[in-house]
Amino acid sequence: MMGLTVPEDTISFEGEENIGRYQSSDWAERAWCKTCGSNIWYRVTVEGPHNGDYHMPIGLLDDTSGLKMAREIFVDVKPDCVSLEGERDRLDTAATLAMFGAS
Image (cartoon, rainbow, N blue to C red; front, side):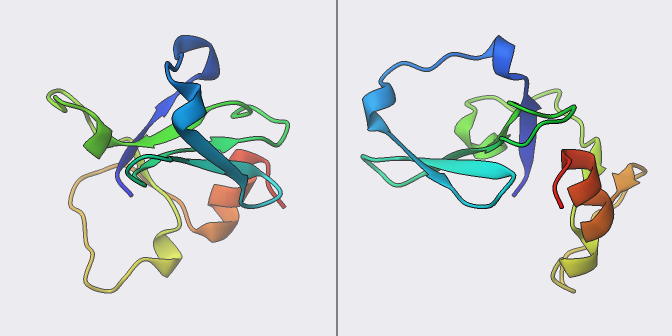
């Protein structure tokens, strides 16, 4: 997923009755639109520096102008056909889970 991180205190939602949620791991929940099935976010639920942060697909945005890729995560399990150019942090599974405070 190409996504952006949105701190919990900077976002609000209307129509929450249309949002389905599922605790998909011991460290995050996922949400989707109950009407169309689109992924809306995964949110870090474990205590730590990213607790409450929403990670949302950029496809939800009408305008992605000006966005810059800051990091890639889980790079050790990415498909061989995916290779992104540019300089940024690239985190393997262990480093990604450590960043989120997951075990």
